[in-house]
Structures are given as C-alpha cells and as structure tokens.
Length: 210
Image (cartoon, rainbow, N blue to C red; front, side, top):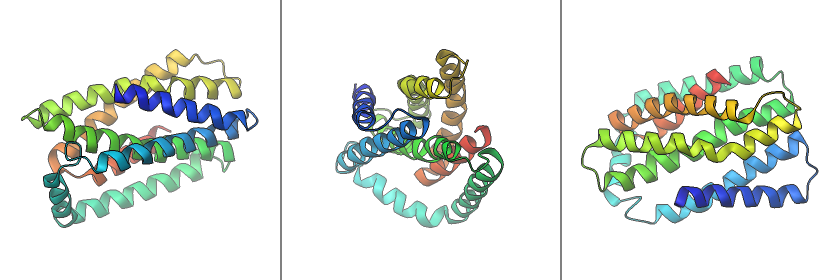
C-alpha cells in the first residue's frame, strides 16, 4: 500500500509542477526529477527514524561495512563514475533533454529505488523472514512490479517526443531490465550487506542500457 501511495503522491506533485510550466520535454523531466526527489527525501526521513525499517543493528552493520567493504566500494565507485562519464559523452550528444533523461534514469531513480527497496523495505521484510534469500526474492518481485507505477513518466515522454512506440512495450522492457537490476543489486545486498554497492551497481547497469 505504501508503494502505491508513493507513486500517487509523486504523480500529484509532478502534475502540480507541470500546471505552472509549459508541457515540454524538458519541463516534463525536470518535474519528474523534482517530484521523485521530494517524495524520496520525505519518505526516507520518515523511515530513517523507524526501528522497524532502520533498526539499530542495521546501522551498526553499515558502520562496519564502511571499513570491511572499502576496497570493493572504491572499485565500484570508480566504475560508476566511468559509466556516467561515458554515457554523457557517447549517448547524450550533450543534448539537454537527453542529459535530463540520463539524470532521471541513471541517477535519481537508482538512488530512490535502492534506498527504498534494498535498504528500508529490505530491513522491514527481513524482520519477519529469517532467510535473506527469501527477502531477496520478495524485494525483487516488489521492485519489478513498482516499475508499473512509472507508466505516466514513460507515456508522457513518448508523447512529447512524438514517438511511435507504445507505452506498454516500453514498460514491459523496463520490467525485464528491472529483473536484471533486482537480481544484481539483491546479490550485492545479500553478499555484502552494503547499500552503497547496490546504488553503484544499479547506476552502472542503467548507464550501460541507457
């Protein structure tokens, strides 16, 4: 239920922003980015103070991971920076609209989804499920279904660029990609218990397929 509410609130905020802006490709994605950031920051501030979503034991584990996973964090952080740089250089042609889409799909959404699914909701499910592999499967399924909530973003972007693609086809392909991302980031969470690695991997994959 909370995920449905998050998507509805995001859509409402986006439409409010668009009501004072011209409906253009650039303004649409500025509104998308801002609405996700507002919803994300608000919910994360709320969940951060909850022992159910952010237990003290998890915070201690994260502090330990800061040192235990130092080398692999550095490696994936460098790979992430390289991926972002190459994406801007070779895939956006320095077109502002393309850069906005890249920021949305390869930075804002990965940060939002990883903190939501692989941190807070993972902790919540894990408090009821002893086997972390089961948690991995449950969170993966939920995160893939969550992509359906981005229907408005996809359909409106197709509309403003006058694309002949159908939203259903794009959403379906995004869900296929979501399975890959959920498997990869879930593995990082399961093996290293490190949200930073999940974020880095999500961004890298998003850059590759952008």
